[in-house]
Image 1 (spheres, rainbow, N blue to C red):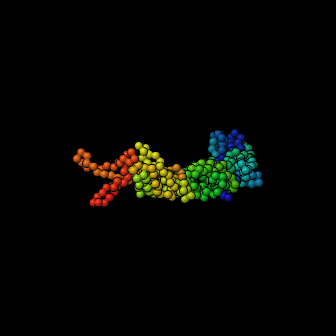
Image 2 (image 1 turned 90 degrees about the vertical axis):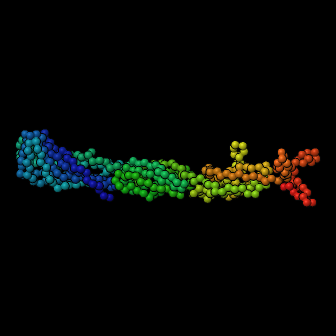
Image 3 (image 1 turned 30 degrees about the vertical axis):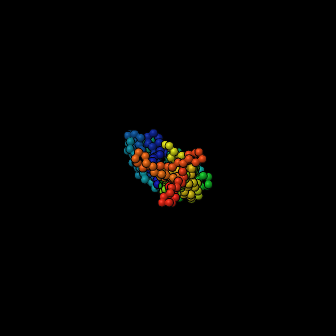
Length: 381
């Protein structure tokens, strides 16, 4: 694992006598996956706290360190004016410290500073030697939680669901668990520091089916997972079916044959084709009533018990497994006339009419009246 970038440098005071103060400059960098911090001391600074106190030394001693075993000093020439300061450049010294499983530093962390002006202690000039300041609380913990995440439904089709996932931390694995079937790799990641937003698609779903999916990620270090977020969704229905033709066929005096055809929507599952049906309705008065229902595989029907020589209006639609209904298609068709007709003169005009006869004391409509024409009997049908 690799360390991130260095933090900004900061100064921490290690010693003061009210007339002067001495500070150590330091900075840190963190290896988040490795759960550790490296910090380095960089410079020493001596500051006069008011305008009355100043000193110069050509053989002063100075040093900085992170732990006792690193302590070394060097001879420097120093001049500090009243109210001023002097920074002494000293080679960096670094130390690596570990964090516990919660990301907190496991040991006390200090910076060490050393200064002797070798002026015999005159006028409060610093002659303290080594001093230590703790910086444990100044180094941030490493976030070992799963971070903050959100998951939501971006879109659905009849067979897919697109999930939107956001994290505020980098991830090395994003997983989903569909309907409790087990965790699977979503095939996407958020590798950059600070995370971001990504999308992934779950495929192979049934149309208009209800699902629940859990989504989580693994952090950029081993086996640290976020809390799972749950998204519930239903896939889309297939497109509504369509009637493509509707016509009438053979007719009798009491029946009409109707033929029709149609198409089911795109992505409609083949196993549910038999659950779709044609619904034929007939206009009665001002409203339609259902007179026939047939399987989607049956594309004709016979409407019986109709009146002879009468015009009827029908409409047909398809109702599929998902409750989606097609637009209606309508036609009109007329039953056949099967009785006898004759022409009579009424008001000086020939008019067509149905012939009725008296048979057995009862008046009935003649179904086949024959008349003699040229010595031959002929039907009036």
